[in-house]
Length: 114
Ligand code: 5GP
Image (tube, rainbow, N blue to C red):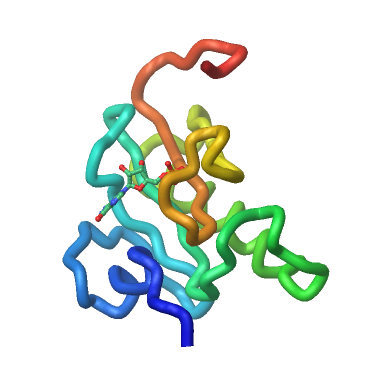
């Protein structure tokens, strides 16, 4: 069996995290190295490495992740202004290979992103 991802270890409470949302499909916790006043990660329980590895079977799950991201932003007072980011692959900065949606809010953001 392949080794558990860092985020699976957080989901299973082997590693502590500031968990702010949880349902049967996904979990959200604050990023350990926040890049905005509010910075959470929304993570599916299923350890898909990255978006490119998702399949048609994950179609509903991917939708649930976005809905959870919006809910988390809303619950923390950022329902009308938040940025979602998903890194896919080491070349664009992905460091944890368990799919996650960054939810960033509480400051202004430039476009295009760096
Ligand atoms: P990525 O670079 O893969 O898109 O994002 C990974 C994110 O996970 C980074 O923003 C990083 O700060 C965060 N992270 C890495 N290790 C931990 C950890 O142990 N706990 C928490 N809460 N966040 C982590």
